[in-house]
Amino acid sequence: MVDLIDTIVYAGRLKDKSALMSSSSGGAFTALSDAFLKSGDAVVAAVYNYENHTVEFQMILDEKQRERAKGSKYMQSKPGDIYQEAYHWLMDNPKKELLFVGMGCQSDGFRKFSEIKGIRDRVYIVDIICHGSPSPKLWREYAESIQKKDGRITYLTFKDKRNGWKSPTAYVKVNGSERPLKDYVRVFYNQCALRPSCYECPYATTERKTDMTIGDFWHIEETIPDFYDPNGNSLFLIHTDRGEELFEKVRDNLDYRLSNTTQCWQANLEAPTKKSERREEFWNDYQRKGIDFVMKKYGTVPMKTKVKNKLLKILRGGYELSNLDYVDYSERRAA
Image (cartoon, rainbow, N blue to C red; front, side):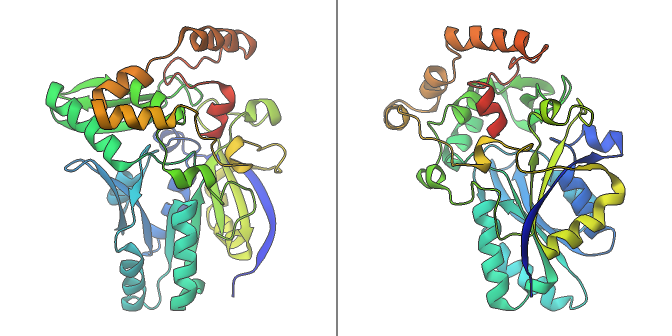
């Protein structure tokens, strides 16, 4: 039996600075997955497939596999048969437990599955704050276009922190050289390319039925300035008594601070991403003219936005949307 509780909020990050720098935010996924892998338990999470440029859920049983699951992925992931795989693994390992990490819809689906199968007391279920997911075909064609022009993609990151957590760099490696992904990231954040269901997402709230929600603790430098770290800060929302147990498993490896839902506010904890008025135009252009055309048309930063970003840099003490060129700061906080 898993009981819902009033949501408990923590800000946190890994004490291990090297692991923190290799994480997208504050290392929440690394901390959680470490707790399971080091005790011989299993983790289910999404992994990027460089052969077909899709994101697929996999059973993860060691740290080497886990490293492939780290990092933000700005495309839809495929659960495939992972619910059944997780169930059969638990049946084959009756003394083991399992951590499931996915988007709100995927994790809540697994929650319902685990209740039906009678394994809810053996799984810990975590979801990730989500801006929405574009069609997987959009990314696949984009990646294939890069490979056709420049060569095989061997590495992908959407949130490299070389310039700090608040100014992440998105790029792929092709033939040993970095190729930026600014156009794709702009399309992702201009709200044209998401799936229709994402604009009506029921999980855009602080109240959920998973055990825990994790994500970036955006604007922590304003709400908890004495706890802010420029190298990354994670948000932990605990929804169940099982989520409390889960946080106990990892707290010794974290610097953390009790917070609240007011301090951690961000757009996608209040409402789904709003659909762009240009969405229909975007998809019509894509169907008629292809991926390269829409990336050029919709992945270009308007001069108005460039000016706004420069002003925000001044107003926010040096923070600039230079690497990903998000539409505006409120959208950045929704990521």
